[in-house]
Image (tube, rainbow, N blue to C red; front, side, top):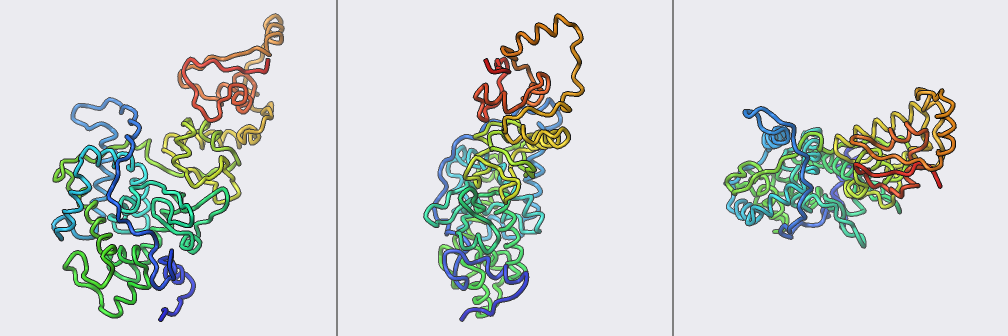
Length: 419
């Protein structure tokens, strides 16, 4: 018999467990039963600035704080609470080098999820839940299968407000899906009062867990894996979560080192206030278009629309700051057309501070050669600076040089005018 629906905010918490099956029994995602597989090596981090010999490199110091905050937020049992926890921990780390590579690849997303978990006061172990589900990979949801690093099915996505259309799938949106899942887990805990049961509910469905609690009561603190009448895969799901948490608690026990990531590479979202292509956004952010696409797989087209749910982009902090600066310049100097990739010249006001050529011979020479101008890229230059210096538009330079989202290279010769 189905529970009586609750109203207002409570109804969302009740429905969030529904995914592939009716809400009274359905899990929120596909059961995670596959052991980890190797992942490609991550792109090396930029070399940290020189520090005194007594201080660790900046990237190590930045990430050490993240790992410490994560450990301090753990709320469930440790490594030795159940033999199966150690079995899975050793299985994850049977190849230490492969584990370190996988964790390095996942680290930007892991840190982002940890920050959202902290925001919702969710137990730190759940920041590691995408490792159990997908190893933080944004799995596409073909043929109505679960999608994203949280493995959410389309029916649940609709309930928790993750929009989808021909150009966008919110289940693949790291920022939007993480926020929705953490809100869901918090609501589960408000109902079930036990983080272990929250994990069971995530795997099996909240209504099913509520029914079991009514029948059997809340489980005792021991054993760590509650002996409730749930499927084996549900019990194993919690075991895996505690196993990866165990490795984070005590990596030396498993002969692995946790990776590092400098603060300027931590992920954050940028609110896009102009419609633009993803390639154009990448140029203004100072990053490769393919890298930006990998961080934003929810964008199924190459367009960022400021008037739809697709108006946020996830990227490293240093690139986010550069894109915000570019958009602010567009606002201040009325360069919306240029930023959007429309081939219109920027308004004269943008170049009001440029020096005026007063020498008549120089002016004549400039007029004769203006159709054959080129510029050699110098260290630290970007398209905005080059376009401003030559009184042209970013989009024109992109078009003439077939950049299409490619980053500038030192010494590259750019065409500035059509032949």
